Each structure stands twice: as structure tokens, then as C-alpha cells.
Image 1 (cartoon, rainbow, N blue to C red):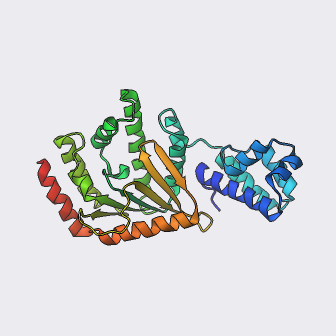
Image 2: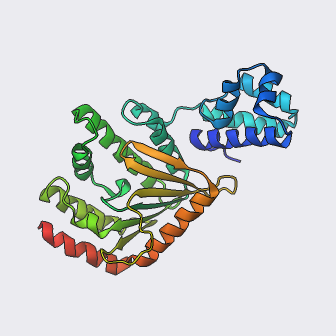
Image 3: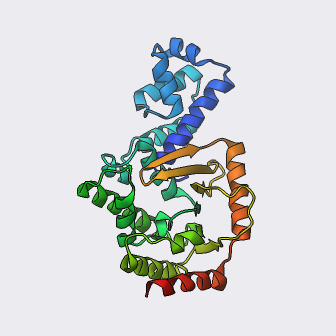
Length: 288
């Protein structure tokens, strides 16, 4: 079996270590005493907030009595992968560690579902629109180096997702308000909407437009990404996006199920195919 990238490897490893502890009915305090570590070290390793060294992993596995060579090798491979540097880590000066993890999960998702109620979602933005959007966010520094770095990150994120054409399905719901809202002026919007029109023909991409007057119960006013994986070992995750570099991870099964329901309700209330293209074309006329 192929070992996943660092983010999924870290997630699988922490789940495996927690499962081993719970199966043996150990508390974290019992583990602390057994391996003679600090309690914070035990909890941080199990939470995935720090990577575990191979030596420490060997010690934990001995404590848990794991001696099956196949299982030991699998967990060691996960630990090695978890310690690899993510491509997005080169942007860590400009974005949060949670956002870097988001990029890692997105890299390995087989299905990406995204909704944004305010602007064109990041995966469908042209460079000029992304630059203008980042600059107008009042809570961000207007330092040009920072803006350029965040735009570069967004473009590389797109490149990596679309390079996996055939291995990933992208379903995006765009609020019609985002087609009307001018970001960066008419020239930028003309380029953005033309780019969006081209994205309708991108393999593996489905774009829906939710009309102004769509009747959707509990219509969310925030954006979110629902990421699904083709391995039965990896359950879906949801990321709530607040700013271009600020996200929050949701892993609770009940909450994820609620977001799946919300996305399906929004999709059913949206227009797709030629009707969605028609809505887009109507707004393109405003920017001629």
C-alpha cells in the first residue's frame, strides 16, 4: 500500500496510536509513566501537534506490545512520511500551520466540495482577482511581499489540484452575488469571469451557481471545503475558511455529516450546466 503524504500520514499515525492506547485501556497518565515522558509529550504526539521520532515510536510500540513486523513497518513508514516537509511549508511565514495542513489534505482528496457565499472560490480565481482580493482584506497587512507570497501559494495550490485531473473531482458552488461583486475593478472582473467560463470545460470540475432568490434552509454565510478521500481508512474532513490564511479543521463525524447535508441542499438549489453558464454570461455583460 502506498504511504500517503505528510498530512494524511500524521493523521493516520495519531489515530493508530490513540487506538492502541484505548484498546489496551491505558490512560495517557499510564503511558507517561510507562515510557517515562512528560504528559504533555504524550498528549501532543497523540494529538498530532508534534511529529514523533522513530526512536520514540519504537518505545511506544514496545510499551503497547506491538511486535507484528508488518504493522511495525507500516507505522514506521507513516512516521517517516509525517516528518517530510510539505510543499506549502515554504509559505509558513505568511500562512498559519492549519492552512498548510489544509493544503496537505486537499492534495490527497479524491473529492473536493467547496462553497463560498461572498467571492469566487480560491481554486477558480485568476491571478489578478486573487491579488486584488487579498489586497482589499482589511485585516491583512498590505505588505507587497506578503501579498505576492499569498498569491503565489494560491496559484501553486491550483496547479497541484488540476495536475491531478482524473484523480480528483471538484464540485464548487458559487453564490450569484460573487459574480456581481466587483473585486479589483472592471478589467480584473472581466478577466476573472472569462477564466471562470473556461473552468466549466476543465475535466473533473462541476460548477454550480446558486441564485440570489434560492430558497435554502439555513443557508450558510461562511465558506467551507469538504474533502473526501478514496481510502476507507481516511474519513472526510471539513475546513472552515475565514481568511486566505486562516482555517479551522472539523473532524467530528456528526458535524461533517451536517456539512454534507448543507452542501447537498445548496447543490439542489443551484443551477448547473448551461443554466449556470447562462447566469455567468449575464454578469459578464456588465464588464464589457
